Image (cartoon, rainbow, N blue to C red):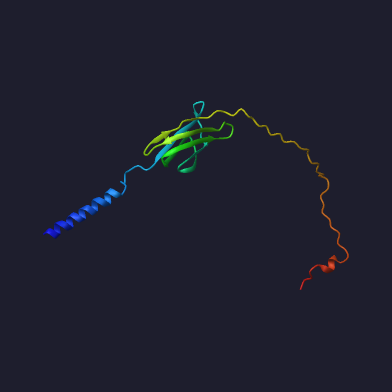
Length: 150
């Protein structure tokens, strides 16, 4: 009888030790960064949003509502950058993300003051529409070097 209780106690200790050493299944191990990109209160689709931090460099593009989402990032400080042609590049450094935290970064884009103009110039090519012919001179050894039918 004593051996039976001893065996049950050892089994119970092993089960408790196994659960105590393993992380809980529902325990949060990441956070998230979400937000919206707007220009003058108008959502901006197609903006490239990049985050750099402990999760490495992650890149996404805003949807039709100007929203972006990085759902599973490691805890730490991040730099968020947003860019699209015709607008100034947005950058926000040291955005802290904690375990289980959802950080919202709303990005206001401002139109760029630098404008580029491309000028294409050239001359029209004259094409003679009256003549339309192809010619070649064959002489000397050329006919003799041509393959002969079998």
